[in-house]
Amino acid sequence: MTEKVLFITDTFENLNFKKDTSILMIEEALKKEMNVFQCEINDLFVDNNDVLVNCREINSLSEDIDTEVKNDIDLKDFKYCFMRKDPPVDEDYNNALHLLDLAKHNGAVIHNNPCALKKFNEKVFATHFPEFIPKTLISSSINKIRSFFNLLLKLSYRFIYLTHNI
Image (cartoon, rainbow, N blue to C red):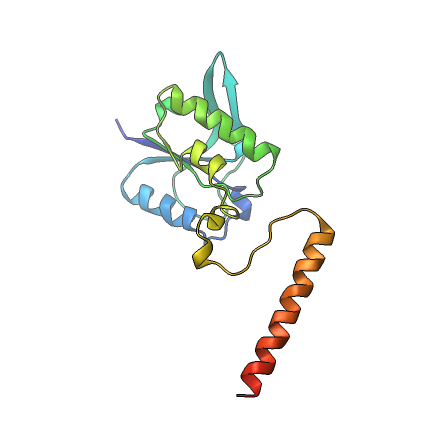
């Protein structure tokens, strides 16, 4: 039996065939003669506590892949499931992570651990290493953002002045 692998990505039409690492991973799986499937996060669903996906099979990579033909498959039936969806971290993304966590609990092999993706957001994670990042503000307050921007402008002017007068 050929091994099945699932890639949960952005919409297939929006993947950049020249730059997207998900495309590279799909190509490698095809070279290894795996049965490759692809879906988006809104294709995940739960039926009687089983997490299934409505996904399309990819037999070769071309930009004219039929994106309409889909099959419902339990995530446990895949040898590997790769969560490759790029943020935004919105309600749909978080709901998909909850479903993937349930699938993992049910025995599915999920790469890019859903709990780690929830806990270590790519934008916030760097704040765990303040010695390696520049002055940082994370806020939804426009007033705080404006103040921070003005502070950075002042620091930039000082730096330019100092380096220009050396």
